[in-house]
Image 1: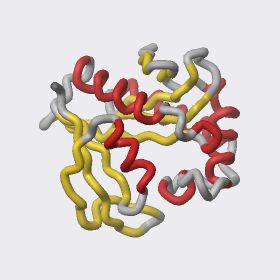
Image 2: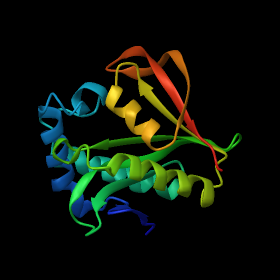
Image 3: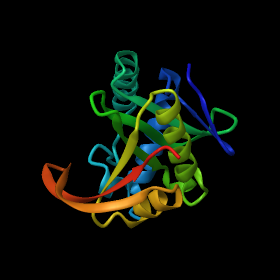
Length: 181
C-alpha cells in the first residue's frame, strides 16, 4: 500500500475500517458553515452515512487498481487520526497531467494538512506516476482552497468560465498548476 509522508501527516489509501471516521469527518464539516466543505463539495452533506463512506472507499480501491485515481486519507502521522482527504484523479495519459483535490475536516483546518498533502501528492504525481503537470481546479469564491494552492506553491493560471459542476450548475473556477522543478 502506497503511503506518503508529509511532515507531521501521513497520506494513505482509505481502508474499509476508516468508513466510520470518514463519515463522521464529513458530517462534522458539512454541518459547520465555516468549514466550507458542504458549500464547495457537492457530495458532502450533514447526513453523510457510513454506507456512503464505504461506497466511496470501494470506488477508490477500484479506481486505484485501474490506474484512474489515487485517493488518500490525510492522517496525523499516527496513521489513525483522520484529518481529511486528498487525491489525484482525472489522469490524462495522453498528455501526462491530472487533477489534484483536497479537503480537511472542520476541526483540523489551518493546521497545515492541506498544503502538506498537496506537496506530497505533487511529488508522487511527478515521481511515481510520471505526470508532467498537476492541476488544482477551485470554484470561484473558495478563498480558503485558493490560499492552500498558493501556499503549496501552485501557480494561478486563469479563471476558467463554467469549468466545474457544483450541485448541477456550471460554475467558474480558478485553474492552478504545479509542474516539476
